[in-house]
Length: 133
Image 1 (tube, rainbow, N blue to C red):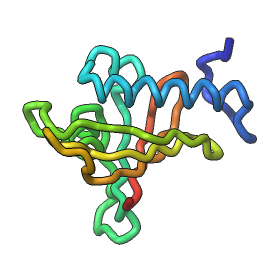
Image 2: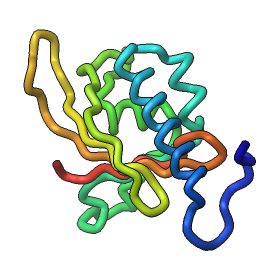
Image 3: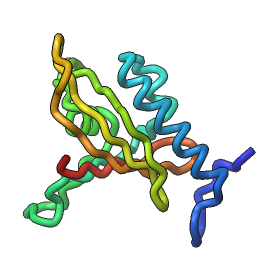
């Protein structure tokens, strides 16, 4: 079993990568199912979201906290409703997991694409960096 301690320096171990992908898949599955209780097991309450245009913004382009990240990264409204998340691809990259998918509105088969890079620490997603898809 892998400890919950944050990794120090160096590349992640193979077991850590497998655990990271499992965590990210479970979080996106909870989003797809609308299971907020399960989602909270896999996403840190202090999660950060990094705007895709962060280098061109007059502010730091980072939001913190699960409610803010749900609104920004997953297009949820204040009431918690929004498009359905359909994650298709989970790819291990360096110190994170790249997730590609689509936001689907009701009755829609081909929605808006998204590309997220998720960083996992201690078995929970701690940062989601969005890229223009």
